[in-house]
Length: 127
Image 1 (cartoon, rainbow, N blue to C red):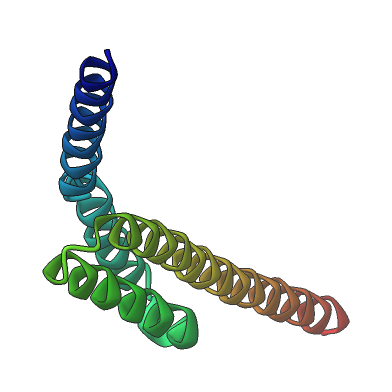
Image 2: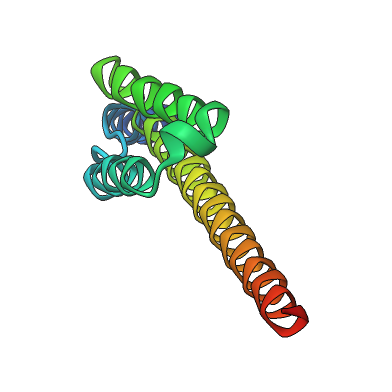
């Protein structure tokens, strides 16, 4: 009787070992979508003028994107996904800052133009 219980315990341990081994071998898939979004967000930020208006944020986004690609090379897919997502967030921040700065400049130009017109109207009315 002891040997049959012992054999069942051994078989159970073997099955458990196989399950643990298989689980350890499986890793998350390559974060293709996140990497593509990161690359796209960087391109969009650059097109928006982030190189000029938000260089710090754009540089950080590039660094995170590079770190994500390096993590993929090291087969650290969970880290790669997280880094790519952070790169997207920083690139979107850089784009938003660039757009806000350009809007501020456009507003200033409009205000300057309006002030110039007012000055010209006053000059013409005085004469």
